[in-house]
Amino acid sequence: MGKNNISKTKEALKSNPCEKYELAITNYVIGEKIDIPQSELFEHLAKCQSCQGDLRNWRATYATMRAKEYDSRPEVKQKNEAFIKKLVYETKETKRTPIDAKWEIGSAAGKIYNLLKANGEMPIPVICQKTGLKEYHIQQAIGWLAGQEKILLTRDDKTAYASLRG
Ligand SMILES: [Zn+2]
Image 1 (cartoon, rainbow, N blue to C red):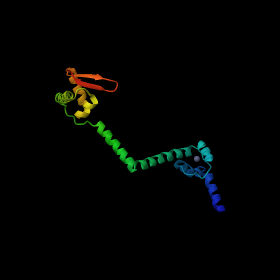
Image 2: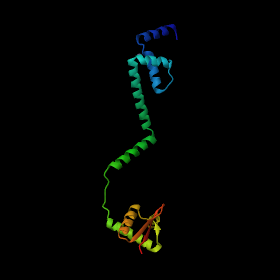
Image 3: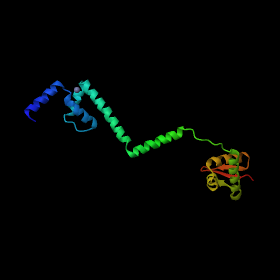
Image 4: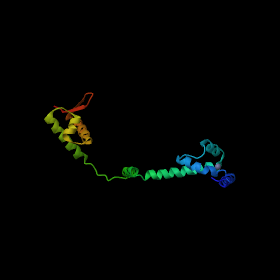
């Protein structure tokens, strides 16, 4: 740097003392090395409203930039889309069809009754497995059979058992 340049820089600094800190502020925000001592930058920031404003603006801009960059990553895009889909799915009213409870529970009860007739007492999880019925149907059917006093329910500390009433 020639003598002329130095004096020019000094003049510029005199006319606008903040100029010196502009680059330092941007570098500080993006996490790059700053070309002046950090303590000097902080000292200036503490007393300069204009540079505080700059710092805030740069931070906001950088945060937006980073967020955009992050959102455009394919794996993030995919995740966001899946999340939105899930939200839409969960909040939209799905098509409902009535359950023919009498028939469904009746036929499940018949299956369970026949299974118990053939095998004697069985743990309820095994009944689920053997009949292939949904838990919802098993519960309803067993409740119904018990209410009709067709089956006897017992339990130990592990599970519940069903058997036909003799
Ligand atoms: Zn300043």
